[in-house]
Each structure stands twice: as structure tokens, then as C-alpha cells.
Length: 153
View 1 (cartoon, one colour):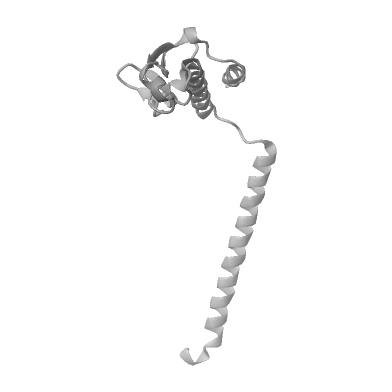
View 2 (cartoon, rainbow, N blue to C red; view 1 turned 90 degrees about the vertical axis):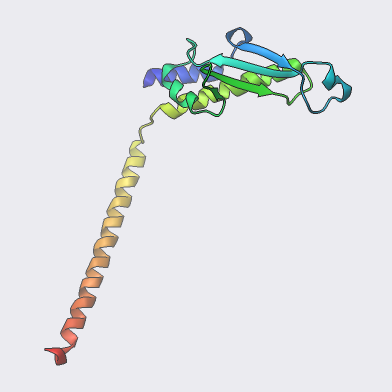
């Protein structure tokens, strides 16, 4: 688990190079006037889940992602936000990076701290005390009812 945390910390500091993914471009809708009809500014990034730089423990969460394409076992991210093709590529790469980080975080289990464990024990003890007090209150209420009604004996 420590290896996974170390990998995650290192990966957060890095960016995904273009050579690690498959890029494709298409004509984009949106702002740009007549430029939209002439220039392929829409960027699509496709990356296989089984790449060596993607951790195996994150594959299950990646397959549950809405960006997952089951037919090719890949993650597909597109961007049409910018008017520039290179900016859309950078946007796709940052989105892919965030998707992989989120998937890796989901699979890493974190242990609660000692302070959190002590707080839970304290809350459990308070709940048990409250429950016992409530039971005692109901018990005395029932006892007082039965002791009061002498006419029914």
C-alpha cells in the first residue's frame, strides 16, 4: 500500500507526454466563426488501460469510468473547449491525468488516525450511556405505573 501511495505522489507531480497516448483530431463545433469549418481543433486522446505506466490496481476503477470504451479497453477523452488544437490536446492530457489519479485514489485504502479512532470510541461510549439512560427511564416509568394502580390487583 505504501508503494501505491508513493506512486500516486510521484504521478501527481508529472504530466502525461503526448508520446504515451494516441491522438486524433476532428473538426470542432463551437466558437471560431468560419475557422470551425476549416481547422481540426477537436482533440481526442485514447489510452489503453493496460499501459505499463498505469497501475494495475487502478484498472477496475478506470473500467467503471464514463470515459471507458469497452470494445477497445481504453480511456477516451475529448476536448473542444479551446479554439487551438494544441490547447485542446493539453486539456485532454490534463483530464486523462485527473481520471487516472482519481481511479488510483479510489483503490488505496486509508487507515484512520489514532485521533479518529479515539473519537469513534468516545462517540460509541456516549451512545451506549445514552441508550442505558433511556432504558432506565423507561424501566422506572413502567415500574411507577404498576405500583400506582392498586385497584387492579
